[in-house]
Each structure stands twice: as C-alpha cells, then as structure tokens.
Image (cartoon, rainbow, N blue to C red; front, side, top):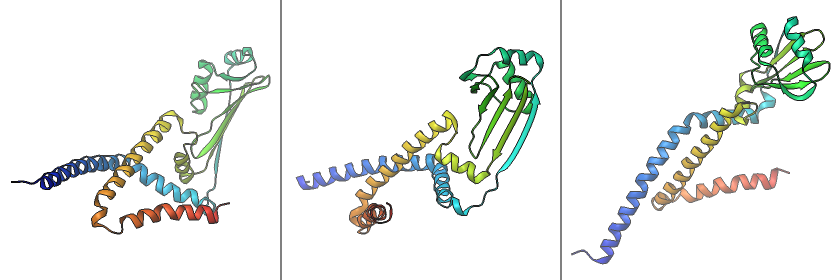
Length: 214
C-alpha cells in the first residue's frame, strides 16, 4: 500500500517528466529554427567588433543614359517636391536603360534635378536625373560581402521582410534561451557547477560594463 509521501513523489516525478518533455520539445524546435541565424549573428558579431582590422576596398560603378524627349516632358511637368515617386513610365525606362529597379522609390524633386537615394546592405547608391537635359547618372558603391552581412546583422537598409525575420528570429532565440534556463534549473541538483556558471555569465558582462565602459 502506497503512503502519502510515495504518492506525492510519484506526482512530482510525473510533473517533472511532463515539463521536461515539453521543455525539450520547444528547446530543440527553437534551436533548429534559429540555428542558421545564430551562426550568422555570432560570426558577424566578430566582424563588427573587429571592423577596423578587416580591410575593405569599396568598388564604385557608374552608369549614365539620357531620357527620351517624350519622357523628359513628363519629368519637366512634375512639380518640385521633397518626396515623390517617379512615374511608372520613367522608372520602367530607367530599369531597361541602366538596369536599376526604381518602382515605388521616392526621390527629391527640385527645379534642377530629381535625386534618388538607393541605400542597400553592403553599400550605397544614388541616381540623379537632370530635369533640363534628361541626363541620368547612377553611382553604386559596393563594400564587399563582410559589409553586406554586417548590415544584415544591423538590419541596415534591408527592407520590411528582413525586419520581420529579425523579429521572429529574436523571439525564437528567446524561446531557446528561456527553455534552456528552465532545463538548467531542473538538472541543477545533479550538476553543482550549473548556477556558478550561470552567475558568471551574468556577472562578467556587468563587471566589464562598470569597470571598462565609460
């Protein structure tokens, strides 16, 4: 016949097994989902922290063209404004003429020119259309793959889709860390070094911030 302590022990063991099962499940699912992201952010953390020691030679490319008279009249007819999208006919022509996609891109319209800033991960670009002559000048600066992945890490000029990815990745990484912390707490009784190591991970950054960051 089972005593009350024995029944309580069995209940505790069942509860422990239940929570461990679900913690393991969410831990491995979240780790699988954020594996590539963690590798990317860890490696780019190193390149960002050592950016001054990583040489990068920017590659600058330039293109030019002249807007046809029919489209130039349309450009001249547009009023000067700080933020206006190029008409579709003009953006389509620019895309065909110099291979730059401008659909939905807004620019600064002055009396003399139309200026479009085209920032991108790993580089920058701009395009200017002279409203009098129709001359189009495009310049693109490419700072290499290291700069490209560094900008992905920072979310610099990466667009809405990548911004959503960063948010989802961050949530997944939080699930991975939190489930790992609960699993540590459940196994800590058999692993005496668990909490000293966790404490070191908390204290060390604080010490560095207090003593070496001003």
